[in-house]
Amino acid sequence: MQSTLRDDTPDVERTLSGVAATMGRLDSVVNRLARRGLADSVSVAVANTNRLLLRLDSLAREAHSLTAENRSDLRATVTNLTEASRQLNNFVDQMSRRPFRALTGVKPLPPVARDSSRADTARPIGAKP
Image (tube, rainbow, N blue to C red; front, top):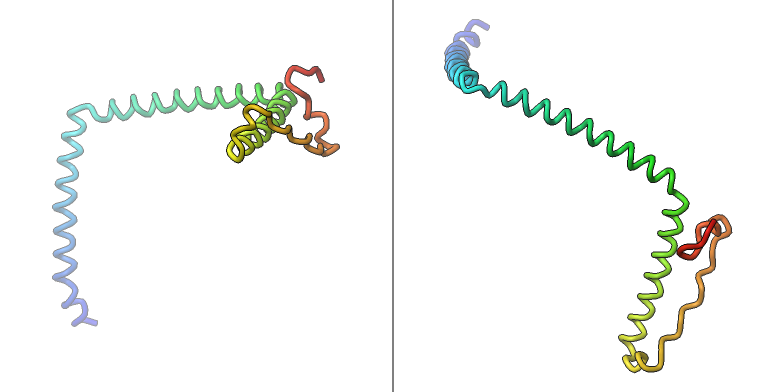
């Protein structure tokens, strides 16, 4: 045990002197930063960040309430956009295969079979509920 302590003591002393030197350098850096007013800059940045977070929280609440108030209209809009996308994809597909369809017309897609649980959301654009 004594020999282990004797062997490790120089390493521990070297480590402690290195830590002391590092702490001295750190103290000088902190003193320089304190003289330059970094603490004030950090305080301002934190205050600005807090104001930004409060504003973001307020905006999130407003977006949530707006979405909740218009949920049925948003669903109808998504349904209409989905159908318009489906029809446009069919049109592009038909025109790509046979460009002469620009003259003869493209056969429209059959309507999508609607799920009875979602039938109330499948209104055309501008239709009243």
